[in-house]
Length: 199
Ligand code: URA
Image (cartoon, rainbow, N blue to C red; front, side, top):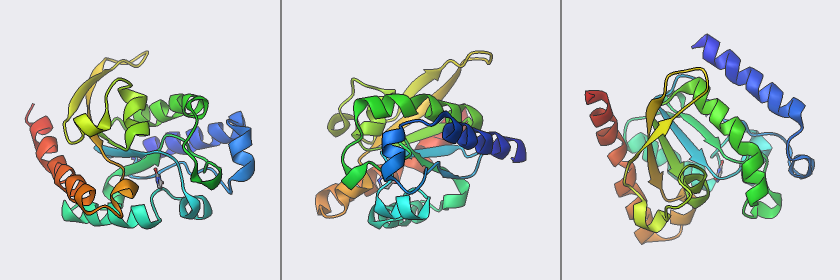
């Protein structure tokens, strides 16, 4: 929807104006805000841009992204029909893990993105993303198991969102067992979505 896309565009401009994480901004090429449908029913959230994402300004376009695209295709979804973003929106130097304070600074903007898009399901990719929403859960134990989360945004009625924790596609790239686990979890997405729509 045009209005939602405008709100997302304005949020990106605000992030740039707010000059968040100037240290990361200095070493990165650009802010990788996210892309896809501004009214997507499903939002995928990764950790932070890597080298390719930093160069192209788009999330999940490197090797992990290729595998991610394959899994989307398996469930008949396209990148245009979902929304894809990361918690941290500048590439950390040498792809190091994002620091807790970096995640904390970016989190309110991620929540704003979700408030604008209002998805039915958030699919977290990897432990960093999961723990931003559900800090006490361990990815190895809860992957593939949907969780309901109540979202209370000031000024609007509380609503429920489903969080589906998945392993990060990069972790599965060179590990056959993990790859199959991720695929098995990924194909649950349409099943869970159809259950959400029954209510
Ligand atoms: N890994 C992520 O977490 N996000 C990307 O955009 C690319 C790789």
